[in-house]
Each structure stands twice: as C-alpha cells, then as structure tokens.
Image 1 (spheres, one colour):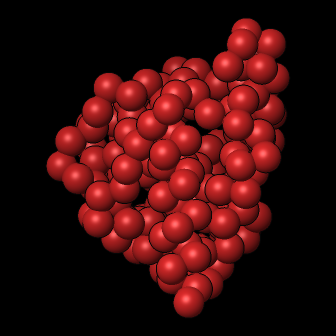
Image 2 (image 1 turned 120 degrees about the vertical axis):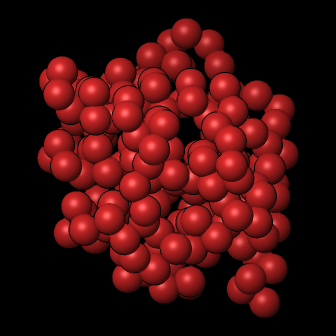
Length: 168
C-alpha cells in the first residue's frame, strides 16, 4: 500500500470511528482486543492494528486509558454488546472484529467462536455473519491494493471459502 492509499484508508477509518459515540468506539476497540486475545495471546501485528484504531479515534485522556487497558483485559462480548444499541454500529464493530481475526493470515477456531459469540450478543444471525464475511472478502477481492501483506490476501481467500462452505 502506498502512502496515498494508506492516508485515504486511515482518513476513512478515522471518519468512521469519529462518527461513533465514545461508548461505541471504545466497545469496538474492546471487541478487537477480545478477538485478538481469543487464542490466548495478542500478536504484535494484532496489537499494532488495535493501537492504530486507538490513535485514530480521537479519545480524550480518560477514554484512551480505558482503550489501552482493553489491550490487556478486554471485556466479554455480552458486556461489549450492552454498550452498542444500534444495528449499524454493531455491524461496523463486527466487521472490524472479522478483519481483526484475519490479521495474522489465519483464523483459529477460538477466534471464530469469539466472532460467533459477539454476533450472538449483538442479536445477529449466523446468516448475517456470513453476509458480513462475504462482503469483506468481496471488497478485498476488488481492492487488492488495500491488503497490507500477503498473509492478508490468503486470509481473504480463506474467509471467502469458509463463508461459502457455511452457506452450502
């Protein structure tokens, strides 16, 4: 990804994060931390992604402290869902968590379980989760320039395959 593309993408993420209320934005960060910790460890690339979201969020000092604390001890999906009431924000958070689950190039079963638990807490059906996954995979199939590294390309192929398998 070149510098211009990175800026455009960061500006879009900042706009999307900035348009959410503070509780929803914190919940998104906590959910991303939750999926990163689902397999028992947070890898450096997972931490880096979440820290970039924290930087883009515009949190004040207190909010930033809470968000950084989530990197060490995220809340459970049901607790996160309690902070997000509208369907559009819930979907956005789920999209971020699905993307976060693929950041290392593969999805562990416990990460899939976390995504499913969050979706259930959001009162989203398994079909809605598959739809989110297919939309993400489709976007990256059309916009490969947004894939940061080769592992992400493989992860998007896996995402498409997994979602398609669940539909059949």
